[in-house]
Image (cartoon, rainbow, N blue to C red):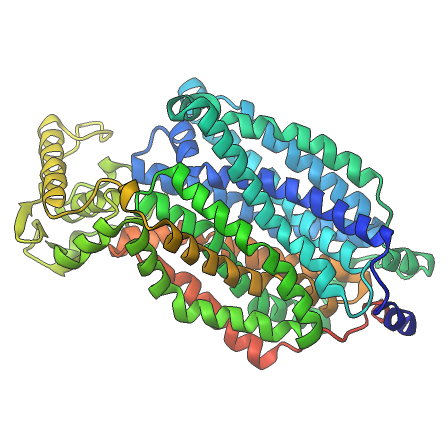
Length: 560
């Protein structure tokens, strides 16, 4: 079989191979579209389904619900990976797309918090969990299916088309959202128009199911099944035997953990950073990110193809290194380009919070409300976080707090709750409102903008920075499907590669927006959240360089 594989290396792509790549990729694009609609609309969804929380907590809670889908992805990998290794690749990821599509449609018709109260948030999180389970079984199936159809020596090129699907799914979601927003207008879109992109996904589901029903099983799996070599217990074989578990752990910590955080920094955190921190209009930010994705997407295939020649590992490690070295300067450059007034104010009118540090609570809680913060430290930090301000916290007088904006000093009040503990008393409410107004006036006088001025946005530079962030994504993500497939034998490939992939991307990557914004809210520096992806990428770079082997010359047909 190795000889046959080697011979096929130089052969042109057959019609069947083109169909496999097209059908697998198109179905996976639609599935990613479904999954990313929520992420693209996180701010609006927070207001619709988490109405009982204050604005900062609403956004963090909506990101946590977004993250819920990522948290369960490894469990989906276990469930569907096991089925894929036992009964086949084709039918397993046919089931996953049905679960994904139906869950997305239901989000589009789900009553909001104002209609059914907290149950709305509970159902929403439940649907996100179902989407996460489905996606946990989707990627490993699609990547394995395409790789097992690919000739030896072209797996990087063939599987890189699967790698484009996540970005194309995000791009498609942004285009549908922008079109709906433009057609309906912002007030109508925020009220109910946001549902349309979710509802129309039922059409994409129909197309995807029809396509996947016409596909054949992979030749590697058919060969293994005809020889009676399919695994009877893929879970215990993958994770109960050290020789395979060791490879799973190396794949996780030496490849996909770093790849996951680079991916979500470049495609999601950058978008959230622009809209929530830099206060760029959502439609403008979406357009610029969509342009960057359009420019960068071909590089998935370029780097995937290049990995067939020079190896997967050098390209992935280079992408990690570039991200580690340049994230801080790139995001600071993004601030200068997208909101120059904010960058100027931060440089000329620094904000300092002088307070009793013993009274400071954790600000990044996804379920916190304004009334959970009654000390001067907490009230000030909450107000500054909601203003997306960068500030320094220094030790001050016991039980007191002062915010200094440039040369202006503002006293921070202490709050008292009513007897029930559910809201501030009348006097505290007035004091906090007065403090927030004085803080807003001081920041405005010091040059801090309430939102980015569209006329001052350097659009070409902003798009260039976003494109560079996407290029890092293509470097770490383009070759990784082929590398993961080549690490594991055919009989347990679906299960073994899916788990580290979805822990790395679902946990390390998917939790990135929530963790990074919680770090920003707690620390008071808008760039502080970047330490999370930089730290994970650095860990992966070291482990990957030292312990992960190159795989491009592996004959996967010989590994059953």
